[in-house]
Image (cartoon, rainbow, N blue to C red; front, side, top):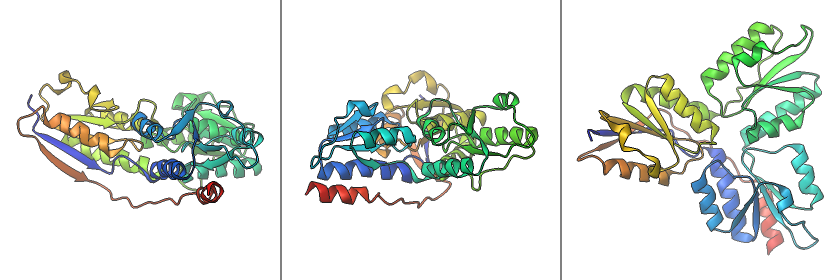
Length: 321
């Protein structure tokens, strides 16, 4: 094996929304059990497995959670991806004590959808069909929202010239692909209004920009993240669009010897839900494959975003004492 160097790009890994979501579950577990979590709190099996080992119970739907009773709170945490009003209403009907771990940047998109639907806009949502974040956003105003996933989808849209149109986006999309769709939308519908502020989150944008800087320096890029993680998949695509072979891996167990023929420099990044401990394990695995492998940082952007925990954590503490 000819591996000589590993470049660890920064920023990578946990974003502020993921840090907050994981902390919400851990804080809740310290004061109350059982804790039920609807869906994966974030899209990463290592994180989910760790929280499960601490006592968190993960469910797909609220019907898997027992109803709450007076004096006996049944705690349900919503994942970082957000939920629709229908899910919130179901939780209320079951008398659950809800702690919402929705990323504040996802909540922003929900609020925009509600606001513009009330103002009479027809909303074009750029996103991936079936993604939990998209399902939650569309649930806020299903009568007003049309989903598009590609430039090809834009060609099939039909709106009147008099329609008030605005587009919003999923927070974890490819910046370049989204820009291409937005350009196509504006060309077809001149009256289209862009969102008040870019909906793609800072972490997604920063990690994609970092990979663009990393790619020319590498023969191969490993993206650490889950297959169902939108932002991780986009990092792999960004690397490949830059002309560098890239693989998305959950952890070191998925690394394959045949990837490294003639590879001297490997770049490593991680999706916004991937914990740093897995990065360390991947680095150790790669270092064991070479005689003397240099590990070097490549810092592109510094991040210092922090989101506060919801007040419901404090309320749970009071209820549980």
